[in-house]
Image (cartoon, rainbow, N blue to C red; front, side, top):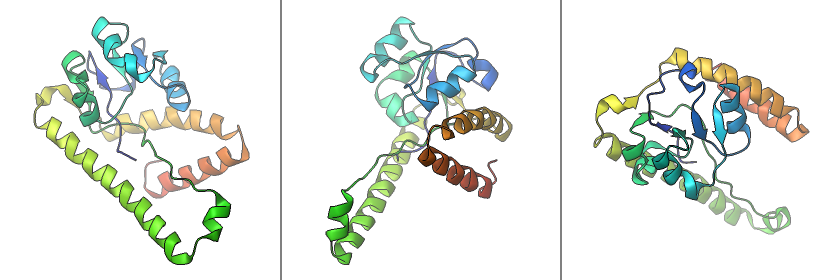
Length: 190
């Protein structure tokens, strides 16, 4: 994981109502479905085309990465507003190993791999948080939009509808959904 994603935009996006009608790049999938529910004109451009699309006005905002990642790519120069801290997504990186191979490993190697995976995650989150803070320090504070809890809950309610729809696609999706909802409820987020 690398942290909650920021959304660079040409105009400030202070609430979900501000998303209505904008042209925005988002990857296809659940994220795009949520943005479409907000009446966003979603474009599923590949990452290599995001900068040019923002620069030329093909899109007005993008769902890409954290504030630091976005500003490092120069998005802040052509889409000066950013929702920060991010309001959505906690992208994940997967570490996978063949189950037969895993089962054949001695317990000490399994423990080492589990610790290494946790440390890689902590490093990623920590380094991206440092990168974000370095770009926050360089920005005009008026370009950073921090959504309040009411706006975040409103977005979560819309997202929850989409999550539920996607949970019906398979038994595994349902298990992930149930786990996610239980966790967010335990954290007081739902």
